[in-house]
Image 1: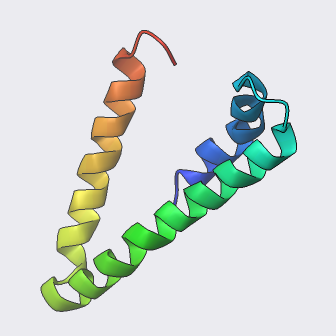
Image 2: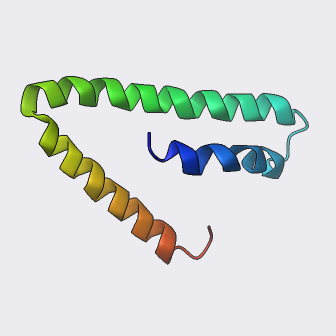
Image 3: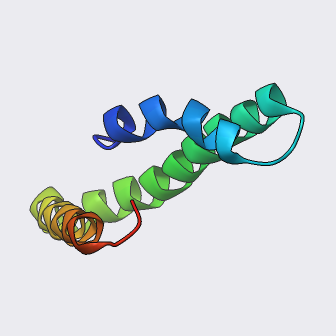
Length: 78
């Protein structure tokens, strides 16, 4: 969820890039999809963290954040 600060500000711009005339609906749909995806991934990881320990999933989160940051950094098209 820490990436929300990076994702939320660009959602309106992404809605403007889409070629449909219903910009408001597309923006609402993107907001909903983002937060439903976040909820859908947080709940299982919460249960797994209770079972296997928080530190394992903190490490996993750091690794995935570094990988996504490197992917963005090395990408030709941001």
